[in-house]
Length: 207
Image 1 (cartoon, helix red, strand yellow):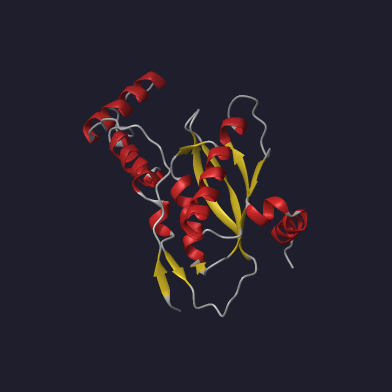
Image 2: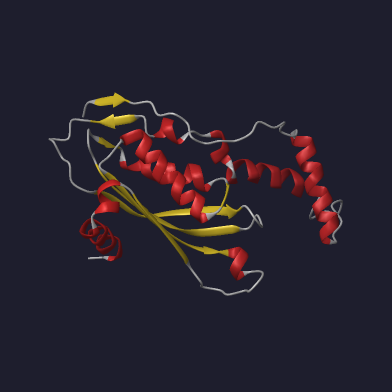
């Protein structure tokens, strides 16, 4: 396949701020351990601040990545294919920005190409980029769709995200098993109910 590199303007608006040092981050974890009622100097916890900071580097690695770069390479040699491309069951783990506890689920993405297609793994990578940040499910849904729109300029994008939020199941109302579904459609999917129905049927079909 021939590939063309496309650029896309960043739309992730974040005010600049001074990032604390690793030492400051580890000290903050020690404070939280003490606040929780435990002794950060006991054997089982003495290395916990270091481990937590290292874990956060992985859990929140989306802040250091750009979705536009992940979608830059577009393949045009696809024999004029212009019908639906669907990747479903993209598993992800994110963290609620209100309580910093996980929400876990799956994303289902479809688009109708205009001038080529993107590697399928790139769609999953875009989900991870936005999931690995402090998020709300609604914002994450919108960010994924906007990134695909900006990079591919397709005739339409469809996204369905379903997740279980630990801030709802392990605290607060404590309703285990409750799931949250968000959807967003653009272009043909937004304007054509038949295309919406086709997308939802394919997402739910396991044949």
